[in-house]
Image 1 (cartoon, rainbow, N blue to C red):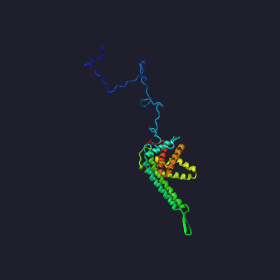
Image 2: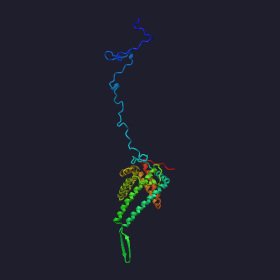
Image 3: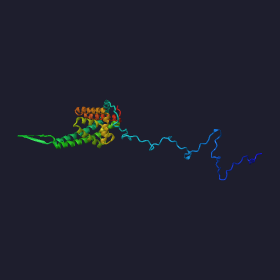
Length: 325
C-alpha cells in the first residue's frame, strides 16, 4: 500500500506552497564548506575569485598602456597655408633637381597665355619707377654747386660736381625708390604666385600689394647689405644669390623678414648649383630685354619673374600649375 494520499478530484495535485516569508531557504553546504566533486570527472564550479565583483584581476602586461591625452598628437606644421595648398618647405634637406629648360618653357608658356595681364602692370610700374628715378637725379643735379668763369665779355658756368646736398638728395631718393619697388614687387609677385597656383589672373591681380611692410623691411636689409658688399665684388654676388627667394617667401608665407632671409639662405645652401643657374639665367633674360632698346624689358621682366617663381616652387616642392595648352 502507498502512503500517498489519493489525488483530489480532477486528477492533479496542488503546487507546493512556499514556507512562511515567501522564500525558500538556500541550500546548505555539507560539513567542511566544500561541495564534493561530481562523479565521473564532470564539470566542477571554478574556485571563488579574489577580484572585485567576482571577476579575476587583470594580468600585468595583458593590455597596452593608454596614450596620454587620449588622442594622437597633431601633425607638425599645422594646417595648410592660405589658398588651400600646403606650404612650401624652404630648406628641404638635400638637393632638388631643376631643369632650366623646363623652367624657362613654363615661364614662356604662362607669359604667352597671360600676356596682357602681365604687360600692362609692368608698363605702369616701369613708368612709376622711371618718374621717381628721374626726379631723384634731377634734384641731385639741381642742388649741385655751380661755378662761373668770365673772360672779358664772355662768361660761362659749369657744375663743379655733387656736393653734400646732392648726395643727400640721392640717398633719400634711393630709399624712396627701394620702398616703392618693394611694394611693387609684393603686388606683382602675388599675381605670379596665383599663376603658379593655377588661378586665373587679370591685370588687377598685379595691383594688390601683399605683406608689404615685411617686404619693404627685407628689401632695405638686403639693399644695405648689398651696398656694403659691393666694396667686395664677390661678397655682393653671394648676398644676391643667397637672398634670391626672400621676397617670394614673404609674399607667399607671410613670415618675418629675417626668417624669410634665413629660409632663402637654406634653399641656396641645399641647392647652390641650381640657385646659381637660376640667378644667372634670370640676369641674362633681363640683359637681353634691356639690349632690345629697353622695350624688351616689358617681356623680359615678367618672363624672368615667372622663371624665378617656378624655380622657387620646384626647389621647395610647392604647387606648380601645368602648362597651358
